[in-house]
Image (cartoon, rainbow, N blue to C red; front, side, top):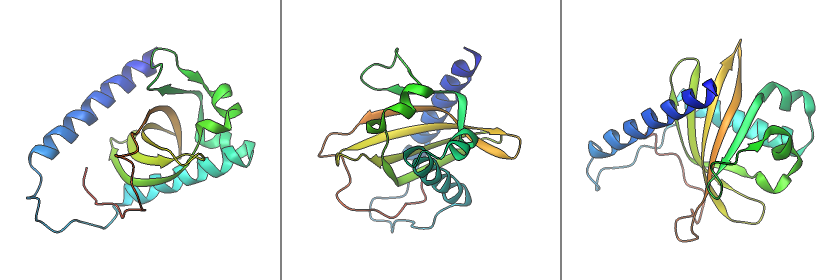
Amino acid sequence: MKANSLCAALLSSALAVVTIAGATSAPANAAPQVSMTRSMVVFAGLERELAGASSGHDQAATDRLLSPDFELRPDAHPGEPTTRADWLADGAMRGSGTDEISVRDLGDVAIASFIMKTPNSTSRYVIDVWKKQGNDWQLLTRYQSALPASDAPTEDKAPTGKG
């Protein structure tokens, strides 16, 4: 329960930062930034590694990257989290890609948000809460929401470096 309170507080803080950043962003005609920050590179790599480990049934890598307390909070039933075991058993819950990734690194906790393409070609908006465990990062909670087809990226977009 304590982890969920921490995650909720972090998510709330992240949304406030995004809202403030959006209010002070550059004019619409400004050139987009396309360089990735160190955190974006690190967490995009962790997301790819987790997707490969979980779909390739690499138990050692999955155990290293996925917290024993992991839970998925889907948009359809946010009050009914999907457990780690159920998420791993259901390959349809996973996808690939970290389009438009943004990372908020808070020291021992990091929040990564991105658009993930699923195997059935739909897109999902994902917010992952990672927690530092020793020298490694483990995914603690994933919040996931289906994107309407009109909001889904039509091609791979370079990260903007914003957020």
